[in-house]
Image (tube, rainbow, N blue to C red; front, top):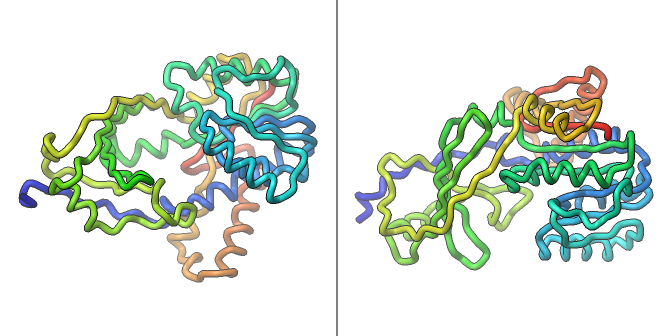
Length: 312
């Protein structure tokens, strides 16, 4: 029944996979903006890497995440490194378990706002509440102006740690709204056998491949009988303008948004990353530092991610 499968795999290029690049620039931007802050909160801290990196320059940091597993990983890292000025806990960004005016800096990095569709204003209200007056709020997310260029639809597979495969059809709108229908691939079907034969993209940050996706084009729709419907989800992404407006609406002042990440694509196309090992690592570190310095000096940038700073 393979004749019913007309799927084309979309190759993943280095600029899409090497997330380290964006993390390096973000780290430089954070070092230069957070400074030697006293009390720092990281909303949606994940495995705690941001606070672990900042621990030497801040007074005390608290990271929270809705995932108990992520919080455990972050806490284990903290203990192994014998870092005493950090704490990690499980909590929701919709209801921060802290008193008002408690922090000098509040970070909201990654996909926190995207995954609370319809409740974005609640998250920003909570961040503003726990932030001290005139202190710094930092937000980072994908740049929809760049993401939407890739197309109005996105079809892909992901794999889970228990050996299953999920399939998702996502439809995108210029407004930033992405609606996705998620399915589980039924074992033993021709589709399941086809996936097992594919070579999945490799990501340095996820060598086991549980967070990478196999992007495809359905030249012919996948038969419904090979799929089990899971759910419909909605995510809201932001352009520089919409992210700035949302923070201004929440009552933040001096809001600035800087796109970043463009130098990786430039360096790749120029062949600067053809070398590997220490030479590439040193070049990436230098370019990340230069891009961060340039963005903050000229108050502008370009690329696939957004870095926002604002005051309460």
